[in-house]
Image (cartoon, rainbow, N blue to C red; front, side):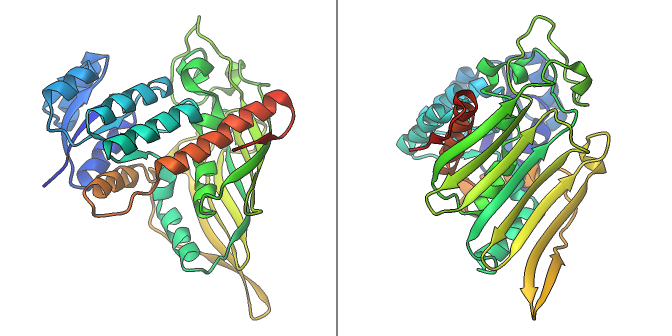
Length: 361
């Protein structure tokens, strides 16, 4: 029997959630958005029968829903997830999980109390290249990953000025929390070891410079707040002795936008990378997936060929959620991993503010 799914949020990510849920055999039953006109437009476009402007009303009137997808600004993730979980529904929530680790812990505990699945859209785990590299790791061909480097760097990529993206109270932070995917992917490859310390620095050199705005057409808010970083750099140490360093930016003096994870294992190294074109759009990107080994006294660099995937796993990630709650696949991520990730992000901001390493318990 197909799972009945409601979606909260009629923004741009809806196209990927809708496609993924249907690919997984799900049935889209309702779209809810505070802007009811936007919800009606989306419902017509995607052939969804029910429209709501209030999530409580949707949950009350459609009691047979199996799951809810949350595609809303960061500040609303925790309250909406708690509402949905307490109503006995599974949750698929956009990234970041919430504003901070304390909020994610509340969500995790609510999912455990309800006995329902809580997953987050860490879609880069669902890219074909990510699946391919993960298979090498699970087969033991890489060995323990001693160190990894995670990057999502942009030269001109601030998503508007004065809107919720640049308002720390609403977003939780700037590029570090917005573009957390590569930190998550590196941790996923490393099997999510327990972090012990973070040393980090943030920068805000260009955060109010409109020459560094991204190409997505997000409108500025003239009287809005812009109080987040433009770049974050950090170093994480784990209980296992493994280490991770990261560089995340919306605006920084880089040649081009790069999204990558590189790692060095006891048996092999590897890299997954997307280089964007000058227009900053997905369809102009160049993808690489490689494995580095020593064979017969020689350095061998293997190019791993996978199918093209412009959407960076967004559709496959949503499909995995439906197949997970249908007991057809294992979930690609867990609330415990999301909590560990948010602890690292919290410690990054704390270390940047204090100027000293921060311990994580």
